Length: 459
Image (cartoon, rainbow, N blue to C red):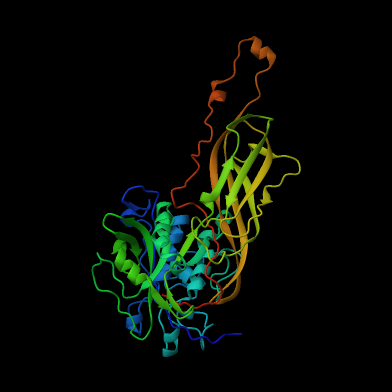
């Protein structure tokens, strides 16, 4: 049954704050310098009938940048038809999942045009429910978008190994004591976690140029930005702003004033941001540095439902059937011991939980190998445009290398002074050359956030 809901849309300016593990007064998350991972917002064409509402996709653009950071999404057309120029581009796929401008018609009489409001009745439904943005970050191959136009995961999730969504936590900073707000945000940035912040639609970076896109006077507004750095000496926050461009700056006071804006549902002033990450950085893998063909060995992993240092007042989205799977490259190097299975339960449920798994293997062939662990769990939740949805969230990590030596030479060979090949002495240890903890890790993750069917709409 369609629900009739009046939603005062909040225009979202998508700023991704992404800070790396820097120790100085100023830092930008690695990869975001000089416009890295930046995408301006697309969508509504400028010849829209309602020209002053020509683009309400700042939140979509921020999610695009965030996903590109973690998964290198790029900006190519994907597998789904129905885009403005043939198959959909990434922001078009994200917009369908987030139900931009109520393209499904769930919240009024009939569907609106995702790209341009086509009737006055759509004016009250321009924008996006904030929890629908959370769902767009959770999104995986488990269930379709609200309008079923994106039916089986995003295009970049079609590789089964990268099928999972990300942890997504909707956090109201006003629930964090004021003296702890900046330390929490700075810690996230220092550890290379970008966040999407929703600020006033009238906010403008201190170093912006050009004309600010006009905002409709009749609607409250929020704008989404991606926070990517800070400068303590100059007291500024660095963002990727879908309207004003890459690597823009707000003074602390300007940003904090612009961040505390009113939402209709939940009612009141809020400093909302979305934390999102794969579980990749929280997958640890240990194994011997060296074994011999025929040896038995253990591979151990510990996995944490990544929410980093977020102090969660609501506990976060719960997952079920969390597990971890093991693979190795090349594929003929090891065999599972009798009775072992590649995928095992982890026993973790909510953000910050940690689970452990051990596999018993036998070395089968000499060579140098790396191990990969994929881990995730399933969540069932609701959002503004979803009475219920299911997704799989998690991540994967590769770690190398392990040397498998051939059998030792037999006694006759030893008598003939044939010694072991020096290659057997090449103990590289836990080389971690397969690790890529630099931020844009190659998989998804997902998790929890701000609660059920609240509109808290934004653009």
